[in-house]
Image (cartoon, rainbow, N blue to C red; front, side):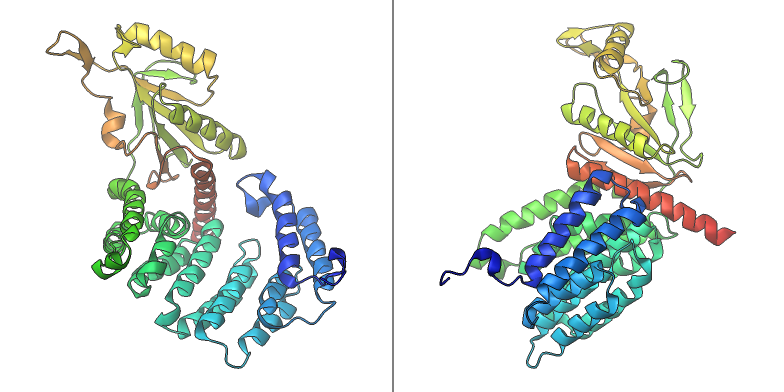
Length: 435
């Protein structure tokens, strides 16, 4: 380095962009799921000011070549939209630029403009997608990434028609993506960031189930590794299995999506005005988040706390923990009233759950060995299939089943929060259009 101090090195736009993203993340991440509701007059101003300062630093030396891309992205964050467009345009005008390099720049521009906090910029993102599509199938993976960015933006805005338009088109074009890139597209981010939002949007539309079935058929076929690819590297079979396993969870429950949800029926309740038998409708205008779980499942208890956090952030939703008696406690067969008393202690005294808990006191049948077990878990389990442990079904205010979530993880919690945002904004848009 010939004695040059590190701090004297020129700052590249890519480095400046890292600092801008880090600053934005530190301010927005603690706010939780409702990203669109963060204080524009404080946080957005601070992020834009920081981006403007870093852009000044980056411009101390000429910006050329691939550095034009991060320079444009910083410009957007700094609210210098025309500057950003000029940077992307200059990069795209580079003589001899390959189709892949052009696609990379177009995706960078599209992702930057596809910000749901600035819906007025979405037509610019759409324009970049049109340019991307014009490059043809040789850049198919970039087209997928562009559609995915727009799906995410429209989903957060509750714009179902636009989510469907881009999500369906992306999955229909999946066969044009080379298999090596197709795996990157589908698993795992494509499932969470494109397939699930698209299905959620379709479940609220007439004829949506038929379209979901068609998309599922495409996905099942396109995650299979061609024999020629496997012959080159058998590891592709592992990638195929991982994609199939992830997809199978959602495909098993997809037939219920878009159908009318049944009310929650229980003959014993906790955290309601009375513990008597009651039927709770799911079409009362509120979003219902239904957790089908058991007390002795650690992941289920984790998700119950997720639902309580969601209830604090979105007070207008109604989460319900749905379970049933088993006929035993530990290694002892016990009468149903004994088990109910134990469940009271677990849920209220030990776990301190505050969400409504629907416990079905199941009728028991004698086994051939003289013991007894529940005949079934009650009507709730018949109406809402148990896909995995735990299973969460989200029902919109009209009583339509819109979303399936399984497992317990930070990603599952984040997705539930985003789904609730989507359904609330979709309902608001529907109300606005009907007035």
